[in-house]
Image 1 (cartoon, rainbow, N blue to C red):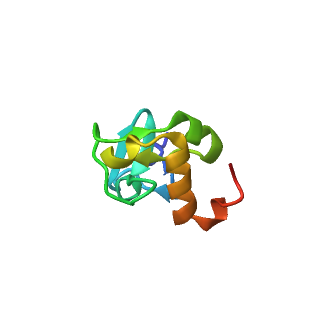
Image 2 (cartoon, rainbow, N blue to C red; image 1 turned 45 degrees about the horizontal axis):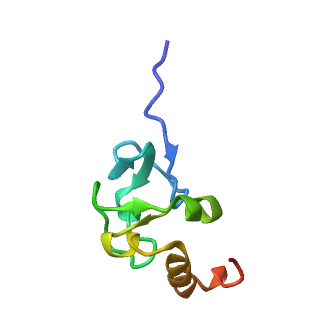
Length: 93
């Protein structure tokens, strides 16, 4: 009988696969590359316990987290800043 090697998982934000030994974080049941664990608006590296997700934006765009500065904005303010950062979102409301 053979043992299988470590499983390779797909990570939620970038959808890339990485090996179990790669640098990652787990937050709210989601595995993320540590390098992908950044604010969706300003790209600041986030820390566990120092970030938040927006449930309404998650339904519309998928998993994203916000830094302490941007987590306090309302949904419309976040959406405006996301559209500036990602012009492809301009047509969405």
